[in-house]
Length: 530
Length: 75
Image (cartoon, rainbow over all chains, first blue to last red; front, side, top):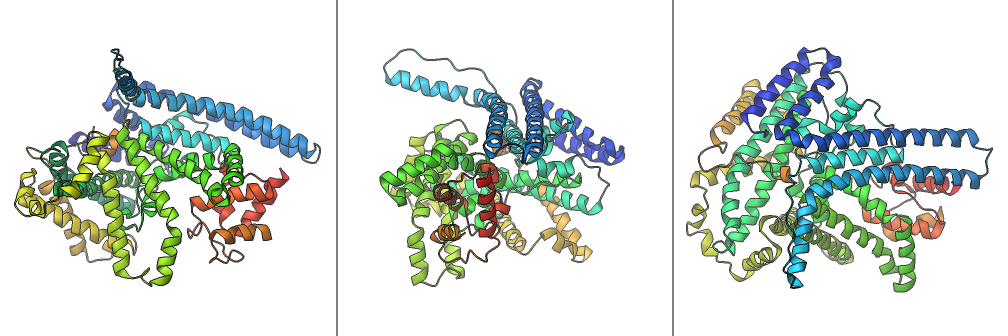
């Protein structure tokens, strides 16, 4: 059941209605039932996975939480009685028991993710090696389907268990509440990857109907539909024509294709998140934002702080920092400093951790070398710009352009082009093909391709281009207004006639310009497949 | 405290770490700085800051960071 399907709209209307009609104490149980029904539409066979993750994380969470409580109590009672060495010894032993439970839970759940997502990728790599070695033997692929949302709910659950291990908060004692946290339907498909302490604040509360929340949420949902149906699904046709016919569309078309894809991905992913946050808002539930106008970033590192924020902070908090400050890594850093000097020794932990994190980020997005290369290229660009910091500092000390509009615009355009180019890995079928198409932009770029009418052969009519252009102007204007605060709050202050005209135009444009007709593929959200 | 200020100034010579109270909130220190800082603290103070202690409250000012080092060295 896609967010953009009629059945989902009916499903959602029923949930909204029931949510505010039933006794408030039944609101969160209703959401749990709704989430499981929503999940059931993807296929009953997937229940095993999400239920296993829920139960295992819940039980281990309780176990670790109890151990942490006992440890804190013991340390408090024996402070001043036992020596520092004895206390330290107790703390180390206790922590190592908690760590074993954590490790068990992570191995089990990342194991499920690994088996369902990466088995066939591993087999294809083994087959490749076997073929290279001249062996006639090839392994058969397994028939494993990827359970819906597994990457997202596994990350949510593992974030929870690590936080409990760290003593950030107590474990949830009600298994049904925990099950709702894991399966909450608006965010199961493509996130955001919420943290338990953030989401649980409003998820389990009793909510009165609030007209402002309702209006805010509904406008946000409509805005998401507009991005998805009017823009993303429309431009998808052009993107597919270019990337599925690499022999025909090279050079200038690759350039156009990469810009189209940047536009599509933004509209698709942020549109989906708008719908998620909008639904939650109608229900009175607060979800952290996942984007902060990322296409206005001045460099890639900043872009990654503003795009898919909850994934970036997940990797930072639960992978980057733990690896970087792991004692053997710090010892290695000391060794490297002694051996290679201060400058290299200081960088090594950061660089090694960055490579591991970006490799993982890549493979999290998809089981293919394309995504691994995509991740590592991001890492490469970030590390190179880190290395160039002295040069940037020198440049800015010589030329006073840092805060000039033109220079900032140059930085923004450069970041968009760089990110779009890296995303070519996401588009083409394999890594060599991606390099070939990237190269063709420099060796086979015919400006005339852009003006000889070929762009009208990509499956997009002149009217489609006009709609896409107007969409781009609207998206950019909204982003610019957002710098000064909420667009909706500004809209509420306008006269009713203007306000309702905007709503009306938004609804009509979704109905009239939404890409549903013949030749259009009412597609899944791109992040659904991750 | 002086050793810590020296480490911080090495990272960003242009910042007054004695008075700055929002090093994380205002993005003066990024994740690369934090990891470099932790490696330096490990080396100079022989104190390992675990990942769970990497929260804004502990890194927003030199004072807060020094308090953290003191607390962890008591462990």
